[in-house]
Image 1 (cartoon, one colour):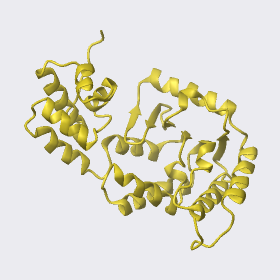
Image 2 (cartoon, rainbow, N blue to C red):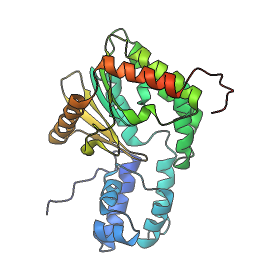
Image 3 (cartoon, rainbow, N blue to C red):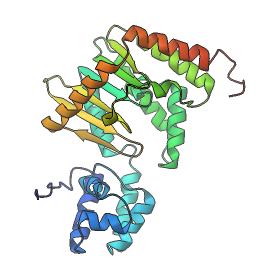
Length: 281
């Protein structure tokens, strides 16, 4: 069995939480699998908590505190982690994103860099079920990130969107029409290449999440994958390569940029015809 990955509690609040969790688990004489079974959640989630890649939901944290006889220490630390404006892994990703010279993204939701203000607000407002943070502050931060696209020399960008994003109604039909029109505009920018992966062509290896590949100025690459309540920055060469191979497989099955624009325009006109914002949704 490989040795457990060494933790650096000073790296972030999430890392400090993870190191504390591992220490308490070992003190209790439990493996990650045994602790996961007691909650119950998958042992892989326990591993992600300990690595600082994911923060447990409030109810799971409460059970961990009791099961590991933490005396409220985990709950206190969890509160500090959750009050940070952005999780540590998001901050690391945004720092890499800001200096990337090329980005490749596969997404099952409109990526943040391509979202309109109304779409972003709808997504982040819905996310309050997981996090009671400042929605308007997060919307503003997301829009500021989009300054990357307006730089004199913006990065080369490849977006592959699962066709499902054209059909999920986020924020109402008028919000979706505006969002799809914005995608068509982005697709006309010189360094933006937008493709849609049609129904029937989704690779099972990519189901259930989104990921990005960033090429940095020194030629190095990092990957970032995210789900509903977690994100993970990946820097290990072999793991980044695996995502690059998956991206190439997805791109091989995606529609061309021209065909993708036609599909987006058709969805916009058929599913979200021009209407007043006050019209029924």
